[in-house]
Amino acid sequence: MTDSSATVRPDRRAELAAGLAQVRTRIVDACVDAGRDPADVTMIAVTKTYPAGDVLALAGLGVTDMGENRDQEAAGKAAEVAAAGVRPRWHFIGQLQRNKARSVVRYADVVHSVDSARLARALATAAADRERPLDVLLQVSIDGDAARGGALPGSAEPDVGLESVAEAVAGAPALRLAGLMAVAPLGWEPERAFARLAEVVAAFRAVHPGATALSAGMSGDLEIAIRYGATHVRVGSALLGMRSTLR
Image (cartoon, rainbow, N blue to C red; front, side, top):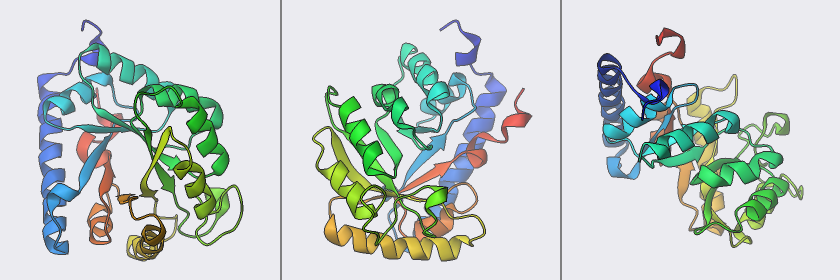
């Protein structure tokens, strides 16, 4: 491609390679400490605010999964990367408005942030003409504060109760209920947050045994998340550096 945003300097590629090596080592060490197989943990490179060139460089370094959190940025970036002949697995990890569902299903392979039955129905409608079902993770509220987003475990609320959202996804042929996602609440230590999440996951899998994915943990707390069963960790700054330092 000739667009400069889809190119990467050799020194930037070296930075990414170094960051990737460090993160991979952290994941392997965390898995060894937890008695888990490192092959069971997928690293998602959170490329929000980073250029398409970084995505292409990471793909060239063997990274297969990329995460974005804003459709306005992600749609164009995914198209640019695809035009360069590279097709990573795209994860939409941010809060999603229902009116963006039709755009997101065009490029995303997985949506991590479904937290209401209404959003699930909007995605199901938008994904109806996909060749394969859209993988969906339900975002769980660990602290029970609905204002922060996340479906509510143990709640009978028809729109945001966790089981209601799960039923909306599981009942849609265009969607596949893949698992759960969570973010440690503000003010909570990761240990407390992920221990609570593990309890929610155990109860959820008893009802939905095929929903085995757990997206949890970021640059600062991925080791703790892996200890508590994360199958996907979302890594941004530890891999790509701080955005303001890029030239």
